[in-house]
Length: 285
Image 1 (tube, rainbow, N blue to C red):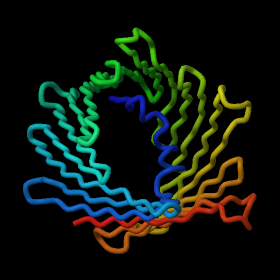
Image 2: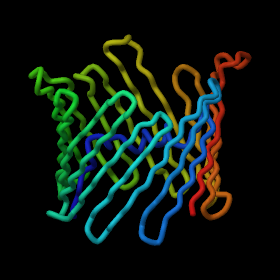
Image 3: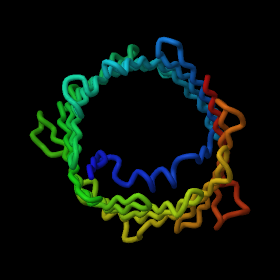
């Protein structure tokens, strides 16, 4: 049986999504997506911070040519940052993806550019990129796996300073119903262990423990769950060792309209004004 391991950054993704996605706390977000007949997808998104009232918005246009494996994306934000990304996947060789990412802030003349290469096949997933204006810096990672077991590592190297900026390592196990991961990041100063279990078609559960060696001796623990009410709605809940309780509810109101409500409550200070709520509305056409 073939097995393609995940990218290094996706190790532990299932539990991260469980305890972080669909909790739109502290802000109100609106996103509108439309797609033209010639495969150009336009996305307009806005996010208002409940505390400061600041609004951040972005306009994105994405063109996809599946027959050539070509994707071109342009973005423009309210902070006047212009961005562009070009991807070419499975065109030169199966499993090979090339991408170029650039951004420009005209007011200050700030530029960023990154070239990347990704290759995945059975038992291996490797990526490398070159940040042209920061260093330049080379970032590379690789994951190998077989029969569900995976191990991986990443490293960032600053060419101009001839110095390793960061390195990380990870190991895990992926099964149809559950995943387990162990990660040592930030030059082996940040450690995490997690598991995610798909109990059945309606219930998911998981937990994550994190220890920052540079901060303190305490271990942060977060537990989360998801319950599917029906094909159009689900509930999520999470709690951590400091007593913060997160609740999320997502409902497809009708085809193309999705509403998410979220709240984060400090159960140790219920009488204080420290709680956060928010919502997210997504429209697809």
